[in-house]
Amino acid sequence: MPTNEEQIRTLIERWAGAVHRGALGTVLADHDEDIVMFDVPPPYDGVRGLDAYRQTWPPFFRWQAQGASFEIEELEITAGDEVAFAYALLRCGTPADLAAAPDNRLRLTLGLRKRAGRWVVTHEHHSFPSVDSTADPAGTGDAAAAAAEQEVRQLHERWFAGTAAKDLDALMAAIADDVVSYEHEQPLRYAGVQAVREVCAAGLDAAGDGAVSWAVPDLTILVDGDLAVAWGLNHVQVRPAGGPAVDSWSRGTRVFARRDGAWLMVHQHLSYPYDPASGAARTDLQP
Picture 1 (cartoon, one colour):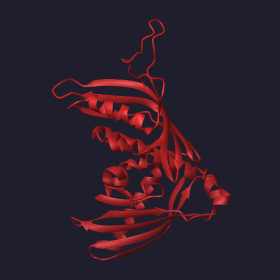
Picture 2 (cartoon, one colour):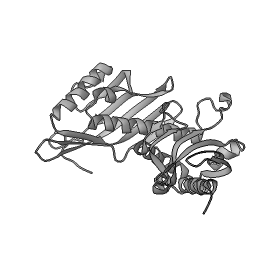
Picture 3 (cartoon, helix red, strand yellow):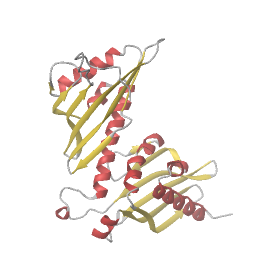
Picture 4 (cartoon, one colour):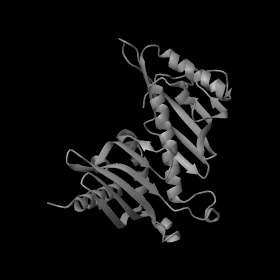
């Protein structure tokens, strides 16, 4: 029977190979339900729980698909009977990243424990060493852009969860005080966080006792330094208690600025297409 160290080495090498291939199921397979990951991008208090961990990977896989490497170079393991830890150095970057900084490595620490006789990862910590910011003052490298895209995508995921929970504070958490929003409703613009808060509150109240959800299935994000733009079709569904679901699709563009290390929405533009023959907004369209 393989030793504990051999079992853990196989687990970690299988995980790293799955990350490189973008095989999400295998990436998740040997992770505990209550995993805590300290990742390169925020949130700064860590990614907590397997569902949150799952959501971090699709943006990374899109970046990985550009031809980036994710390869273990060094791996050391110390294992007891029930608890173990491992640390590793990995080549992680696009060909351009690695050409620009050939010695840079992703640093990885893992904590593991046994569950029902098998090893599972309960903690991950990923980091790159800090480099001279004058070499890339805006953080515009491919890896930095991928990390920033992931941060903005996770911000949207928190908004979606806040909508389902009807948690107004969660919806407002990443809105800048000086936001300007072009909403579906008149007037022409809403200026300031309080005005946007009132619009969001009215939307949640309109759902009454029913369930409400919001998603952007085709969410696209572009990042350059401390600015990001996201766009896609908003899908809002209200499910009244005892009644059929009501779906609404509209267009949305959002602009974010990174201030003091945190992404905040500074502008939003929502709209429905209009029928030029009647001048009426087409709120019934679906993709």
